[in-house]
Amino acid sequence: MLIVLAAAAFCSDFAAPTVDIQAMKRKAAESGAAVQGAAVQRPRVMSGSVDMTDFLTLLEDMTLDTTVLRGLLGQISVSFRPPTNEANAEYGWILNHLYLPDSLRDPKTGGVRYNLNSSEISTVIHELTHAAEDLLASGSAPAGSPAYEHHQALAMLASQVRDGAWAAHKPRTKANELASYYMGRAVADVADALDALRIYNARLGGGGTLVSDEEQARRLGGHILLFDQKPVGARPGGDAPQTWKDMQHRMLGHADVINAAQLGGRDIGVEPAAEIKGRLFQNALGLKPPLSVRELVDRLNDPQRRSPGIDALRQEALEARLKSARSAVPASR
Image 1 (cartoon, one colour):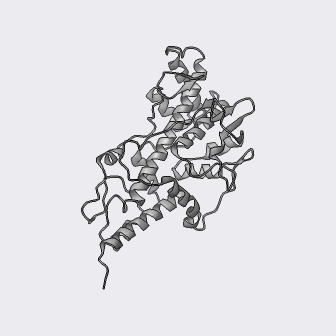
Image 2 (cartoon, rainbow, N blue to C red):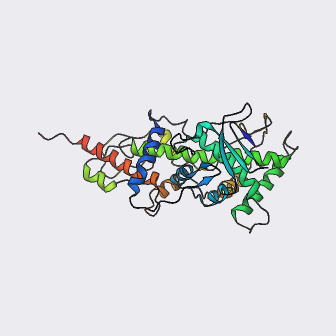
Image 3 (cartoon, helix red, strand yellow):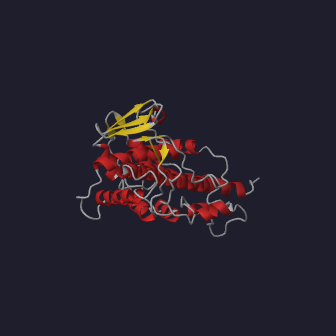
């Protein structure tokens, strides 16, 4: 189905400092393997002629599970092409072919870039959701499985859109489109939440505060803090804006699409019910996403969870805290 690039503006309400977040992601991509040390590197993941490995790594750095996606990518073929007058990206169900815009290509690897912004992540997830609707969702799958829950969510959504104004025509087609828009935006929200945490921990002196000394910085290490947390004994000041503090209570998976989802150039005009969103978010692509910003932080701090980007984020946070601590101590004469 067709889609235009849509911005997922999780952080638009927050007065963040000017930060080149894409440069930070590039740094994570370049340094992550070294930070991870001797971790075993998995084989590259090709779909058609396109290398999807860096995109999967990006999702794993967001604490998402890519097991189902890896299987799905083996059933489809991905290629790049210039945007058409109608769409930037498209999944063709007849040939199981996913077309992505050239702007997502990494000139070095020829694959999908690691440092996608949230809008670009939304685009790829949107189209992969269409592929999953076509190839994975199934009412005959074991009850409770992602494939079964995805199928049930689509059936519930089709029933809901029948009550819409013009949505009664082709309700399953419109349900599929709504689900894909929703999944793209919901996953983009996770990416934006991670970006905000990265800015807060790795660019604002660590946790938005200046640690008192280098010993304290090393004790805190690369622990990722929520927006109102300060290490014991932190120096006064450095508080995060109230809007950032409020974000720690935000639930994920509640993205709205009623003003975005279109079919044939027309608004569908339906917002999926909360229960449907919950089923889609947790099952459509088997991503096992965090359900809140707080859960995302807990995952980032889980010592058993390792990925190049998570390790690089922890290292950046530690370095930021050490820099803050050193700036707090008068230079010795």
